[in-house]
Image 1 (cartoon, rainbow, N blue to C red):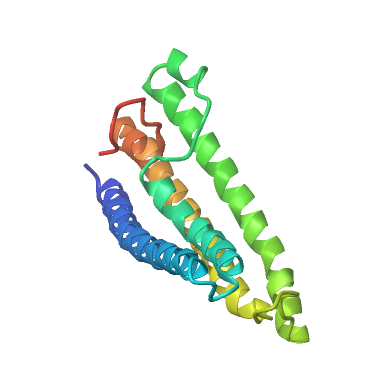
Image 2: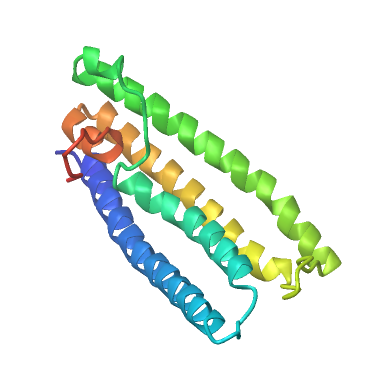
Length: 188
């Protein structure tokens, strides 16, 4: 294995470890949100309520989704139709995988770029939610936006590492980085 391929595989391993840690943090946030909602439901039985748990859970879901996408990428969890991919050899599969990774990275980057004006407007106007909580929108939008930036960064780094592996002829390693996981399989 060449130095470039070894560095690419090391990068992919590091990204996977980092995203697993991010997933644990996101999961903890989701669990805390679920506990808050459950407590609010229990309080309703005694005619009390925190109020706003539906709003808070919506914010938590948006943030968790943005941050969770990087994890799904490194664990090969994104859905892809691969009917043509399965018909070719290792090189053909690698080309389809690289094309898919490139399109994903480009699309996610566009989403992240388009998300910034939303955040910027909320910051400039000190925008608040039109709800009883009057949540400062930037408070929610900044971690949401950061999640999209993180996903875009993960997508480009994963694509670059996989490209190095494909150029080095390491199709098996590239498949583990950007391939697809069949039904009942687990990523390596």
